[in-house]
Image 1 (tube, one colour):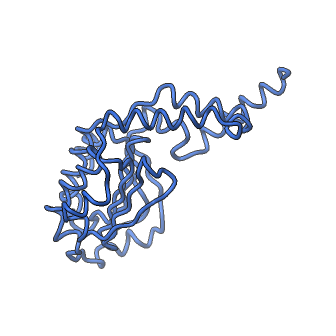
Image 2 (cartoon, rainbow, N blue to C red):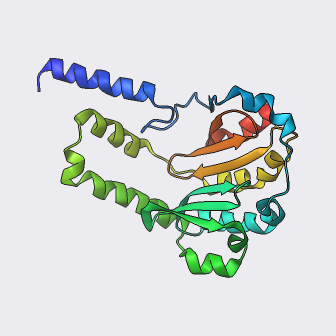
Length: 223
C-alpha cells in the first residue's frame, strides 16, 4: 500500500472517531458526560408530566439485588431498566447477538433469575468476552473489513478494561435517588460492562451518556 493510501486510511480512521458519539474506542478520558439534545418542548412540558409509581418503582427494593446479581454473578453484560414500560432488557455473553426482554415482576423473583440466567463468575465472564473478541479477529470476515476499522477495534481490545463490579453496585444503588428527582426524574437507564458506560433518559429532552467510572462525579455535580 502506498503512502497516499495510508494517509487516506489514517484520515478516515480519525474522522470515524471524531464523528461517533460513543465510538468503537469508547469514551475519551476527558469525556465524563455526553448529552444528546432531543425535542426542547419536552423540557418545557416536564413539570406537567408528573411521575407516577410504576410497577418497577414498587418492586425496585426486590429488583435491585437481582439486577446486581445478573450483572456480577451471571452472564449479563448489558442491562436496560424501563420504569415507564415495566420492561427489563438483557444481553447475555452466552448469546451475545440477542436481546431478551423480561417483565419486571418476574425479574423480582429469585427462582426466575435462577432459571433464566446461568451463573458465571465475573472474572470468567470477562475472560469469555476477551475470547469471543479474539475469535472474531481470527475470522476471514473480520480480516476483510477496511484496515482502519481493524486498527480501531484492535486498539480498543488492547486497552479495554471491564467495568468494575463495585461500580455496578454503586450505580444500581443510586437509581432510586435519580428516580425521585422532582420533575426531571429518571425514565430509563442502561448499564454496559463492555463499554463502561451508563445511558440515562430523564423526564426532559435528550439522553445522558456517562462514563461509568465517573458516575459518582456525575451525581455530585447534577443531583
